[in-house]
Length: 373
Image (cartoon, rainbow, N blue to C red; front, side, top):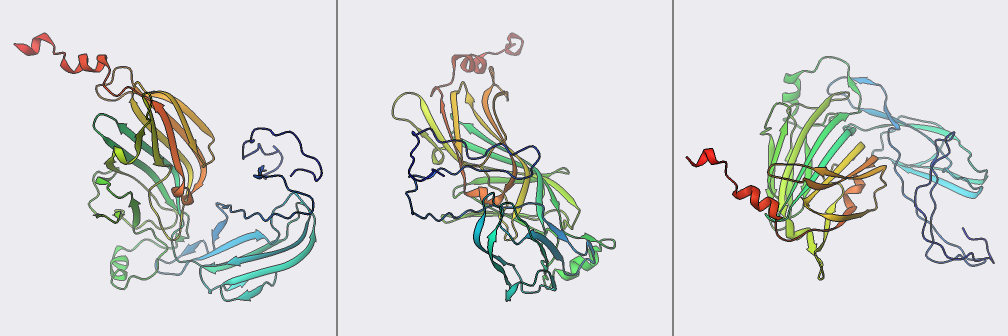
């Protein structure tokens, strides 16, 4: 923040994420205000952040039809590198069934309030824990590989996503019973297993597919109309805590809905979601996300913009059937992503000739002499 009474010369906006200290697990962010804060002026900041891998099932082993309880351990003080004169922490849980908690909060239904606290020093922590009922799966993808392929000549935008899913919920105490599972589906009780995934797609999406390591998975349903396009998936088996399931989904879309040609020159702007995939009420977290945007052969001057924090970006060459030089590919890598990133766009600008290159034309019309006999 700019000291009052002193205005430094303007400078270009710095990057959001600063390199954390090597001895500290804390990451520091720099926030750039649209205008200088004047003397005696106050400014309110609303900061949203997500903490991953903090929920622990307790007990860690449950029966197949038991309720699941999670333990959340946290600090009642908000993390801050500044002294705080007054603070209050409020937690809202998805259920009012909360059998155990510490630090004696003020409780109103499913909402806990800690504080108010006065004159908290910088970096102070005060540990508290809450154990609450949550009989839903803890869906986590250790890896998501997402390919977005632009077919400029065919007017198609092909998307494929490959998932390595796991359930971080409580493990089964005894062996899984298929009979008990089939019987429970008649009254559809809450379960800690992943039994379905709902994937909302952009309106106009078509030709979806759903496969896994065995082959095509027929337990899927695709509903598409002028108002929505939803792909509903059911794994081959319910994914209980500690279990894993890998699969791939894909679909096509009309390229004109995502690609725009600039008025001058041979420039294009491509706008696609950074993340699509399952949208569940309990949320989905991703340990690593790799997004590959495969552009037409000969695409140059590739630039991109996204609000999702990245750890790496590369421009590579990707060869597919009938390519000569290889297609330009933009590869982006992000870590510790949550499905809120579904609302973030990836904007790619590029230059590409409108017609196929002469080399591609020659390759298509050339025929080996032996085949003409």
